[in-house]
Image (tube, rainbow, N blue to C red; front, side, top):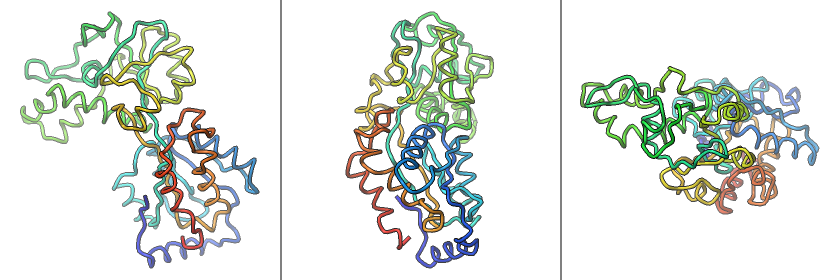
Length: 345
């Protein structure tokens, strides 16, 4: 998919960047953004550096929102070329880009990831619904028609089929795209399904406030934000055998000797259920390319094409080996087609 303006606007965008002077442009692609996309981009960067005449791109993390904020700071060699994201860019971010002169944006979907709910491999198996996580982690829930502070302290108070464990949930911090998908597809979905959203609006709360209340998590220690990567979440579970963590499918699949995963909505997370959309807590992964930098920053278009090649992003490439759910071939070719004619960009 391309977020591009008319040809005349593109010409202006390219011209503005050209003023910076192509001759003085840096010779290394710069990327920042999602911690979920980070390991995939790092694999591609290393392979690209080893197999091309260009230096390996610099890959930084920081979260989807932070990466897109950097991306939208402007055009020029002092700004990044690519933003990695575990969610789609928002309209307000596109507007911020445009205000800073970034009008040509390529959106590239390169595969799928699934958010899984995992815990110690020797613990009893659990089958979750979004309702369970809303009831366990929401700061306030509706009881007898009234919004009250969450009274639940153990998982079997949430669902009688669950073990009598103290609630200890390790969830990604707010800067991570994983957190946003967790809020939208688990907390918000659970809130709506149990009727809490409707009850809050009926009580006089406006819709926006009610939606915010649905995804606000408790701060009494039962829900713990993890600002680091998934290795920190795993460490928490290893020290608390009744803790439950939110992970990406790829990380879980690389740690099946330590973790087991629950179903969500009756569906087990897998490559097949995620790529088909059957598993309810899955999402596409993206990166965004600054069009005005193509042809100016050496190796940028080549890096993108390399990233999307069958050898790298296909079902038998190194990204799939790490855990990426590859795009169907037709989708991959459509994404790659954006960069086939470098001179026209």
